[in-house]
Amino acid sequence: MPKSKIKGVGFYVPDNVIKNSDLEEIMDTSDEWIQERTGIKERRWVEGDLTTSLMGTYASKIAIKNAKISKNDIDFIIFATLSPDYFFPGSGVLLQKNLQIKEVGALDIRNQCSGFIYGLSVADQYIKSGMYENILVVGSEIHSGGLDKSSRGRSVSVIFGDGAGAAIVSKSNDESEILSTHLHSEGKFADELAVIKPATTFWIDKIIDDDEEDGKGFFPKMNGNFVFKNAIKRFEEVIFESLNHNNYTSKDIDMLITHQANLRISQYIQKKLNIDDNNIFNNIMSYGNTTAASIPIALYEALEKNKIKRGDLVCLAAFGSGFTWASALIRW
Ligand code: COA
Image (cartoon, rainbow, N blue to C red; front, side):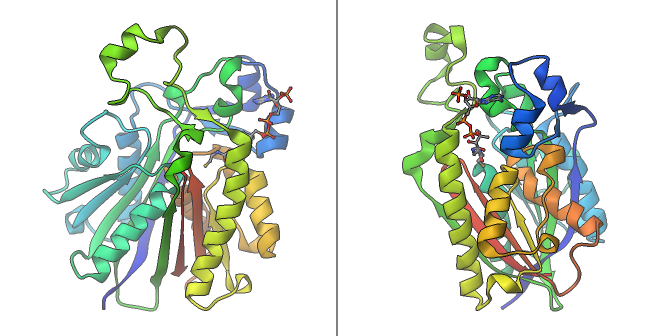
C-alpha cells in the first residue's frame, strides 16, 4: 500500500501586528490579563483587501517550493477554514483560481481548529488508496473581520489572530510517513463555541428583522471555561490514541505540536505527558489562535528553527469548535 508524507510546508501571516497594548485602547482589557490567561503577546490582523483564500495562496506557493514540485503536479486541493471568503463557493476553488492550477478537485473542510488535521487525514487516505500523489492541504483564517472588538466581546476577541499555513502531502518513497490519523467529534457541544449566523436556520431575511441591533449570533460565542476543560481532556486522549495505535509512549515523541489555542492548555498537556521543553513547540505568543492555520504555521516555524529533523517522531493534535478533535503521528 502506498504511504504518504508531508513533503513541504509554507505559511503566511499579515504584516499588521496587533499588540495587547493596542487592544487596551479599544476594549476594557490588559496586557497582563491576556498574557496570564492565554500566553498571547501579539497577533496579526489583516488590513486592506487580503482574503482568506489569498493568504492560503501565499502559504501554498511557499509549500510548493519547499516540496520541490510544480503546481502542475498537484492532484487535489483541500482547504480548511471557518472564515471562508464567501458563504459559497468554498475557498478551495478560489485558491485554485489564484494559483491557476489545472481542473483538479477542490474540497473545503469546516472543522475549525481541527480542520488542518482532518485535511491531512483525508489527504493521507487518498494517497494510501493510490488515487492521488500530491495533495495541497491548506488552513487559512481571517478572524479579525468577525470579532466583537468592544469590551462585550473581550473574552473571545483577544484570543484570535489571522494567518495561513499549507502543506504538500505526497506519496512517500522513503522512510518518512504519516503513521496514522485519529478524528473525533461531539456535536452535542456544537453551541459551546460557535458563530451561528448567517445560516439557513437564521436566513438573511429573518436576521434583518430579528436582532440586528446587537449583532447577536454573528460574533463568536464561546463558553471559555467549558471549552478549556474539554480541550485538556480530549488533547490528552487523542495524543495517547495515536501513540497506543503505533505502540509508542509519550517518551518517544521528538516534537509535539498542539493546535495553538491557549498557552496554558499546551503547558498542561506538556506536563501531563511529561514532555521536555525541547520536544514541544509553541508560537501562540506571536500569532494568537489562528484555528485551522495554527498547526501548519507552527510546523513551518519548528522546521525553520531546526527543531524537527529527518526520522523524528512528530505528533500533531487539535481540539476546537464542534467539538472536534484529532491527532496525527508522523515519522518525519
Ligand atoms: N480582559 C480582561 N478581563 C477579561 C477578559 C479580557 N480580555 N476576558 C474576560 N475577562 C474577565 C471576565 O469578565 C471575568 O471577570 P469576573 O471574574 O469579574 O467575572 C474574568 O476575566 C475571568 O473570566 P473567565 O472567562 O473565567 O477566564 P478564564 O480563566 O476562563 O480565561 C479564556 C478565559 C477564554 C482565556 C479561557 O477560558 C480559555 O482559554 N478557554 C479555552 C479557549 C479556547 O481554547 N478556545 C479555542 C478552542 S480551540
